[in-house]
Length: 180
Image (cartoon, rainbow, N blue to C red):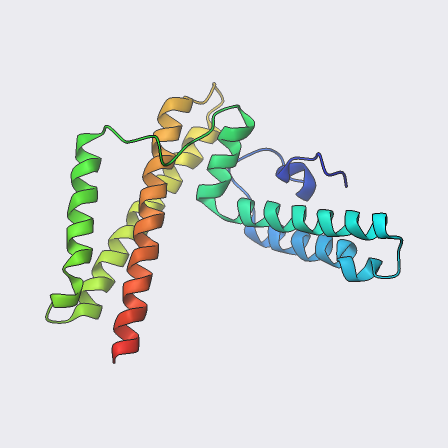
């Protein structure tokens, strides 16, 4: 294993959006067993530092590859297309309206007659939207012709929105459960 391998090479996978999550987890455990810094506790300092760096690379690669959003971002990055979520905005009017509606619904959850039920419906909607976007990314990355990077970046941006919204919904859920 070299520190210059990309995440897919590190785990022995082809550079592709579709990844077998069970194989990923198994390969992660195997790499962690072999590269864990504790195995190098008595080794010279340089060898121990290298083990720490390798373990960190394995952890970062695993976190990236297990998340469809992070994996899509990484695939685009490998092709030379970075996504700066803070600077890029989405121009799709229908999607912008959906964002506004979901944010408003989330803001109104705590005043609903049954806040947990209302939140559950929103979270289901988020999961369905994410599943649709993942399917779209699978189709785009599996296409034999060159991936349309601009449109693929827009799909990733939509996923980022839903990921942030899901985090916010989970935080609200935590607050509601704690208040019970």
